[in-house]
Image (cartoon, rainbow, N blue to C red):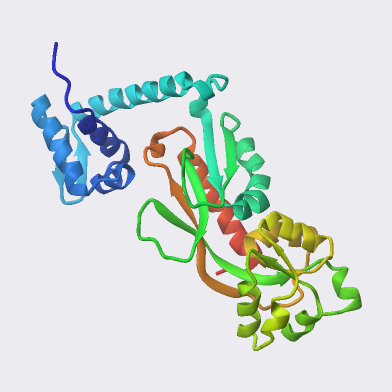
Length: 303
């Protein structure tokens, strides 16, 4: 019986063949491009055959390499499906490979994305979702995870989706008795805070309203959904980013009494699980999400 090559080398080759790039395979597998190159060279030595031709523009599969890659891709799909079906907590979920698992911050998932998922399913009814929210920036077992960060990431597994831009929002009824014409008028209302008073303090300071004691007053909510529900009820004014506010503004449940919108250094990011690139539906979903983000930018006037 032939001695099998290193499984790590086989996995590296499959990823490189599927993605068409040493660099992309390295990013997916968490390796350096040089390590990917060494694995492939080792596999070629073991097989006694060239799997790629190297050129100035990257690597191209040979005929033998293309055939080998096709068979390996099928094998990995069989292994993945068998493993998922064998896992105790997944026994009741047949065809799990057709499930796209999404995780992310409550703000993005609950207040924006979940109401749009049916649009994706209308286009691709063969796919289904498992969706969860988390306050921690950890991808866990999710295929894709969406979160906000104040740091710029050069890691190719982190894709910038959207910068955060915040503005005050409130129920239309709140303005009938006490209109808001200037930022200073906000202090005549109950301010609603998400997790900290710092956002309102900074926003008012940038508008030249220096009243930190008054900015600290008001209710505190550690869940953005609860914050927005309170604003919709007309109980106060919330400081919301565009993702939080878009659908409420579109329905007229909330209004933005001032045109002032401040960009933060933070932004929303998408992170993909290592190995998820080859899973059915992932590329389709990411392309669809990009279109949704562009529509959001246009709707909210974000350049």
